[in-house]
Length: 325
Image (cartoon, rainbow, N blue to C red; front, side, top):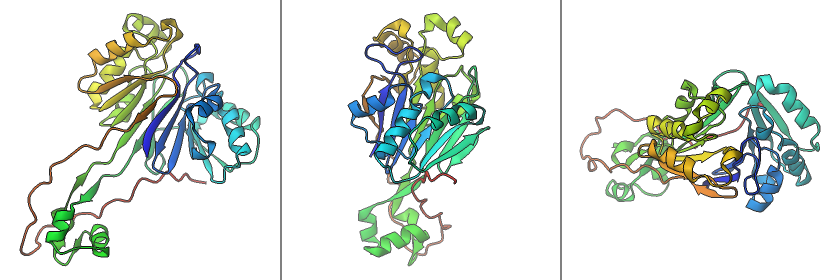
């Protein structure tokens, strides 16, 4: 199961239909909660999201609409007796705010704090890059390693079945058969979360080649002056980010209340500059499935004769998000 559950889409001021920020990425057995603003616990109930789903909480920065829901979420996790460790990632300069929010939460969960003060890996498969906002802010990128998909008809032609298929995938060759002869490349899926920033290199690094890009779209293009003043993206700039980075799907969010509850103008402006990316204006409680994997051709038929090609690397294991204690 890989999907984005949108819990809130408002920026500084919520509206009648838009709660403060909150986004849960369901990624196989992991649940990554991004920027839980005020009211996130209640939105989880409306969305059918269990506190037990959450394994990581990722804060881009410590402005209230991105973190004031943290005590309620942690308290709910304690009430539900969540048994697994919960890893909390946040900018190191926001440590005082984070510790204050944690201190008023109900104790009882295994919460592990992971501050970061520069770009790089913060957990296996999860990276951050600095953004350009009024306080220290980081975006997040989650990447699954590239792998290979076995082709049953080629395995059969090569006389490989049962446990031998797994052995071939782990070792890269078996009995003169190379892994690349009976499989095709499987590009790993990638996700990026870009929030509260002016255009900057960090945003482009995060968005590069992702399948699903969540990007703030606080202002319409006509309000570019305000966007520059407060260091936010306009809808058109979010679209340009998706186009330049080659993102497949762009999810717009973090809408200013000045536009009411209708994001059609922002959707149109982003779409006009997003290139080939599909563009979605997020709504509260919406579930957005991950795009289907990129499809590659099966390549040449199984080679017969001596195996003289170099051995490819074994298929990488799935991404792990275990944090450091």
